[in-house]
Each structure stands twice: as structure tokens, then as C-alpha cells.
Length: 346
Picture 1 (spheres, rainbow, N blue to C red):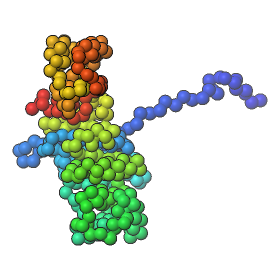
Picture 2: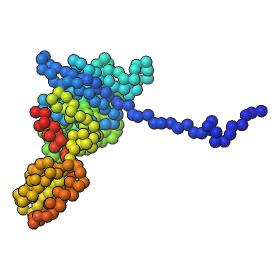
Picture 3: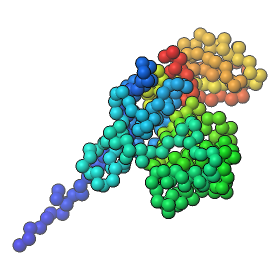
């Protein structure tokens, strides 16, 4: 006779499956680089997850381009390593490899999965937009059919289909930047590096490139952006690393960076007539106020992240005879956080 199982017994209870935390796509570990005797980067460490738009900000000469060249396997490091997930970067025939593999030990294979658009355009000026893409497809070993398919798709993506027969040198600056990004995507890389993608572009063209980057990200590509335009990074990036004095000072979401480096709040006040002398005198001796500055016709009051302090300051503001036009309470911008950090370390 078969043995009956009691309904509701432990044998019949559904198994609870605890979801595992996502694993990083790329791990940068204690990376260091020097040219001759000049140290450029030291002990750089951070993690990037699949689908991130990861921004790296830093002053000119801080090592952003060098970092990208090492991460994409173009140059080697003096110390440290860059590890990538084997299940994303390697085919099934490499199952014997560890969970992560080194970019430096597998440069040829890993580079096939990377796309790189540098500050200096890499397309050929005497070729048309379409010819450039087909040529890059051939260089990456794509079949003629695949190169043509990818070229047509990318021309549509970067909105250059109408201009596909235009010589690259005759394209506008924004079109050339879009063509350069398209060339870096011809082999369908899993990771795209963009080094100063909108430098020297006007605000309208800059926003067109931003829209393109967002669209590429939406298709599943993990993107790195090195930029000195902090508004760009703040607008686009899901994660941000601050590179200064050869180190990564911190990285994370914009909210995490604000919590890490900015312990206060900002009260932005605008009066009719832009005369803030009376208010600054009234707030001068308030212990809650860290400092004050005028910017863009407003008075910015830096204070503690404390509700009681904020209410006290607002009460002082409203006690005056000035005509109040606007009052906003906000966290520091990325620009202000970066300026504060770099000033402290200079």
C-alpha cells in the first residue's frame, strides 16, 4: 500500500527561494598606473553592474582617459586587475573558466565585447558615413551580410540614414559625434566607453547625444561616460565615480554620493530687487547656518540637515520686510559636491 502524505506537511510546503543579489559585471580592483616616474592612478577600486550608465568625473588630467584605456584592455596597469563576468563575456565553450576573468589576461577576447568612442574621432574623414560603418564591420571580422545589417540598423539609431552617403568630413559636429558612436557599436559590444561624448557641442546637440546614449542604454548596453560636464553626468548616469588626486574618492548613485559627502541642506531664496544684505545680517549669527553665498540672483543658505534648523531659518527669512519671490529647499548639486571635495583636497 502506498503511503499517504499529509496535506500541509513539510513535504508539501512550497520551497522558499531567496533571490540572490546581482553580481557585478565588472570589478576594478586596486588599479594603479604610472608613466615613467609620474603616478597617474593609484588604488582605484569600484564595481559596475550590467545596464549601468556609469559616469566618471574629474578635473582635466585626473586620469579618466587612462582609466578607460585600461578598462578596455588598450593599455596595461602596474598593479591591480580588472575582472569581467565570464557568463556575459565568454561563450559556453569557456565553462571551465572561473566566475570572473581578467581583462589583462584575455585582452583579445574581452576587447571584442567593448566599444570605445574617444575624444578624438576615429572615423575616416574621406569615407561616407555608411562606408565608415562597413569598414569597421570588416575590421571586427563581421560577415558582409552582418556588417550591412548592423550598418543599416545603426544609421537609423543615430539618425544618419538620410546622410549615409555624405562624406564624414562634411557632416556637422553633432553628426560626426553620432557617427563615431555608431562606429564603436558596429560589432554589438556589451560595454561602450564614451570619453567626453559632448565636449565642444552646443546645448542642442548635447541633448541630442544624451537622448542617443539613453536609447543605447535602453537596448541593454552597459555604458561608461568620462566627462567634465557635471550636468551631463547628473542627468544621464545611474552611478557616478569621483576621480581626484589619482584616487576614486567615492562612487554610487547621486543620492548615495549626496549622503556620503553632503551632510547639509540648501535653502535658496530669491527677493524682488536681489538685495540680500538685510537677510545676511539677520542670519549671520544663527548657529544653524554654515555659510551663505549669492548665485544666479539668489541667496543660497547652507545649513544642517535638520528640520528644526530649517524651520528656524525660514522664520528669520519671513520676519524681514523684503518681498519674497521664491524659496526652495534642496540637496547640493553634483557640481557643488565635486567643487567642495576638490577644494578640500587641493
